[in-house]
Image 1 (tube, one colour):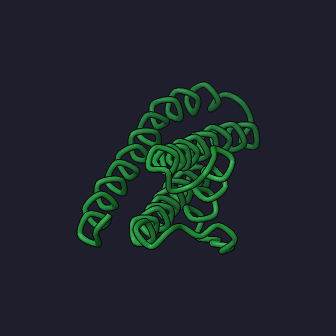
Image 2 (image 1 turned 60 degrees about the vertical axis):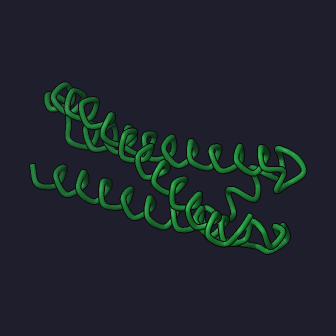
Length: 140
């Protein structure tokens, strides 16, 4: 794959990841509001625990979906040999750990960096959502 193709497809996959992430987090907002109203009658510790747990579940689901998306891409493009390696490589790249024990061929290296960028951006979005939620919980 040419450098230009890697950048174009990487940007497209990055955009898809951002949309997935925002959709999952936005879908959790009505649930948070509903549970917040139901939990308002209960004690504050229960309310904070319940709402934070719901938000964390949404965050984990959003990140897991993206890791699976990247893993599927690595399998479909034959960039890695098997599903286990694809999931492992997706996870360490997306989380920017980058152990370096699985290395893609040069035709995929630039494309793979977009997985790390997606992880960086979406972890930032997740952090903002979580900080916003906790800020609102302590505001009440």
